[in-house]
Length: 343
Image (tube, rainbow, N blue to C red; front, side, top):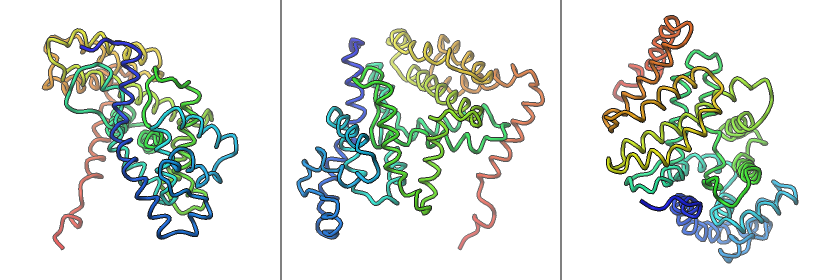
């Protein structure tokens, strides 16, 4: 296996962002040409240079400068100069209409890869996308907090809280950027894709904006919601680690388990809700099973969920509520007879 060094981990971010970098490099010249051919007045208004490389290397800021303060504009340019993925992301989204940006961010979440799957050095033949990560968090939210009166809002924040990543890409803790700068550039990316909300014409932009503000904010009114979303975000990392383990070659499982220890060490102390802690405890012990296999993976998750329910002080009532919530969710998702009727 590849030696586990900071340099190797940094390169995982490069690999995870590579497909989006290639996509942006293909699309930006086409979009730029369309602007100059069909919207020459608009291109002149924003002083949009025709040379794609000049536009990518900072020219894009004239197109979106009105959204940011001079200090924010300079910050975007400074981070863009250090990270190609950030530069290309801002350049690409700047060429889209403000109404289209949030929808494009959701679409590109299907292609943006995450670095965690690359860090083990094990070739799995597949990778986790941002969309899969967010869907996993949403599913965990329902299974853990199905009876919370705010479950709808919790699930919505799970889906949208990482909306800035399609703009800036994915980083690892070993990338040469501080946590504060990473958070700031991500929020500026979110601002770019949600600018249409200010005109009240894009509900998706508003949903994304609200979700990110609650997740990254500190308003005590949303403490319950925020803590549960963050717990699910952390637990999805553990599910990811377990999924990697069951798919890695058996002869490498012990070494991979050691490499993934940082996931478990990071997540455990940061969980705040009892259900999340109990779910984590069951998952953590399951990774030492001798029959850890692809077939056993779903059984491990089901066992962890049952353990979480059974350790609740009001377990019988909670279990009944869970069955009821699942029934309602199934009927809600199932097409009605009218929808199923032939047209």
